Length: 402
Ligand code: C5P
Image 1 (cartoon, rainbow, N blue to C red):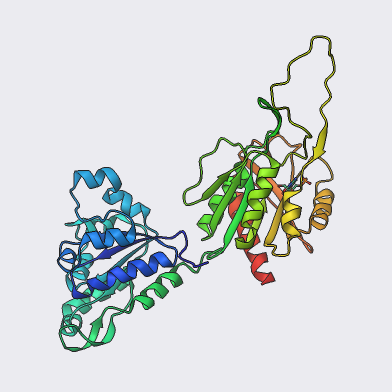
Image 2 (cartoon, rainbow, N blue to C red):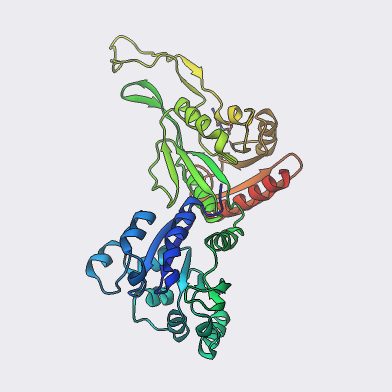
């Protein structure tokens, strides 16, 4: 998987002859997994049409600052917030001057002021314009303000001159983007997470289940995405919104959850099982609603053991790095360590669910992280803060094994 998977790149095109290369750049960034949206200045539209970029990016192209219709879709502030990276390629001498002055007189310059995302500038202009003292002074200003400057390259220019001012090659720009995102602890990794309870049918209207909220699994999904991973959440019936940029597969029973997990196994780098899977299910769920019989005071339900999803994944020939969760009410660490060995896991996160201030439905959690050689206590922390710490611990251990 590429480090651009799940990354949002706002590609801004300004008015130079190199604008034609932005079409290829859009394709290559998308091939590398990025979600690409396009902003074009008026000048850029003289060289290449918004329609071309719309077709290649798969999204409407943004061209106007004051366009009521566009603002109804994704306005300039939303675009500024959406981006993980704003890449201006090609950036003209005029664009660099606008940025150096901090102007906000068109869509692109306004987004540049409004975004907190890193801004990369890939200059492209005639060699004399690049060498001009004004452009060089603007360059110094932008560098001092933390803009990333990619290029320009050297060589024969469209106007016939030779020198510095060529837009970097498309491959070089894609590599710069990838390097920018390589720092995430899980950059380029696919993380699969099971979350929530399972429901095991007794008849069409009744089921056996448990109180799992799914909050820990969803918090881990958010943390893994923030660390650069592509995440697939396999969720039992829970009442939680899907985290942004997360693929979600909804399942009901343990068997459904196992099937979904096995489908993803060969593509997964890390498998995290937070689901509270029902240990048993009714052997033969009734096709019709079971009626209450007045003379019958006792009702016997025959159950059969469910497959252990985590153990099945962890013992697969193509196994990813496997992390389990153990909710215990006594001898927490001993029982968790036994599960680590029995299920063939790389790591297990144990928590004491007898304490009502942490665990199942609570927003806070305190855990002990156990692997073959160590045991570390983490928390109490909010589930999201805890998730961030757990993701770092998993990433470190998984990297150490590679
Ligand atoms: O054995 P126990 O249920 O305590 O193990 C807990 C761990 O195993 C959790 O990570 C849970 O998601 C996983 N598990 C599973 N399939 C089962 C039972 C548990 O994946 N049938």
